[in-house]
Length: 379
Image (tube, rainbow, N blue to C red; front, side, top):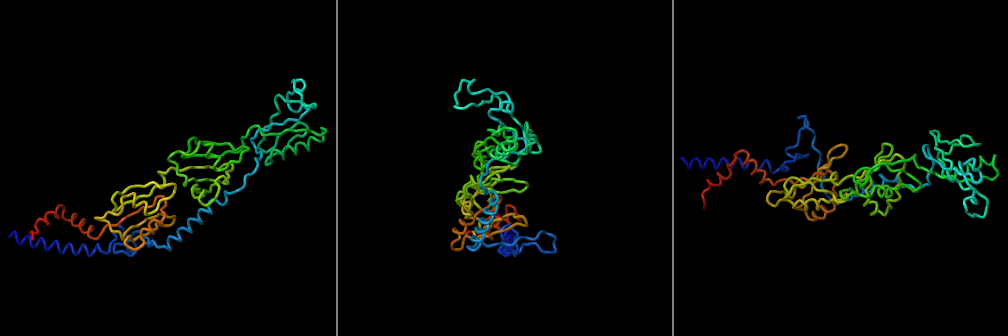
């Protein structure tokens, strides 16, 4: 009786195993992709599976051209020459009319101050101060309302001089911005002192803004700097700019810009499936190749992993994009090194058909595999 039971059990396992191997041989080790035996039918109501793009030298060239084009288009509008500061509403202006203390508050002469200047002049104690109103104008004696918004300091001085020339013979005027209060930017994220920064007479470039914020934090991702300007977001990759020969100091910021330096924790890729050590990996200043990600995860598991089924799943604005690499082909390591990953990419390594069969049998007969093996008589 026992011998008969053993023969029946062995025959059942062999038949079941052949059926499972036949079904798993065309699968993808857990992933349901277009063209596979387990892909969704159009009439089932399930979401359509994305097509698979094989990683080839042609695909690598196309991806590189796309990245270079996107990087150039993102910052082309930000590369503007620096311009002198222009006066706007809210700025506080200091005005001195020499030899006319009645126009500049309390004043004293150079001789009374014990100074010798070589000519008769007055030195103000408290220069007249004016705040540019919402209309961009100041009210000055004899002149009345003077619109100086949008003018630089020399232009505003020339305008006031020409107006005062109708009342004063050859007026000698000093006009400066005493307090810069009209233009601000905001720096946030992985910098040492985030907050509001005031734009003054020094051009506010990308480098200047980061330096004023105390520099980068150790966990800052210099490849993931976002600049929001009037509702439009620009992505700045600082190492890539330097590599392309673009000076980051040429990226000029304007009033209302919001600069955010992202953390490296926001730029991770995820390695799962049949690898030695599944994990989440941080990118190195925006760069991580497929080869590096597999290497840092211990590589494809030699016992259970199928080197023909290395997938990269990437989410785009429209739908997911799936790339496949067969590591058994010649030159596969070079292709893996040339394939650049992007933040939030998912790397999945499929299992071999034998591994799928073993796991299926283990689920159907928990603990049955060791028992079945013990029933096979030794040779």
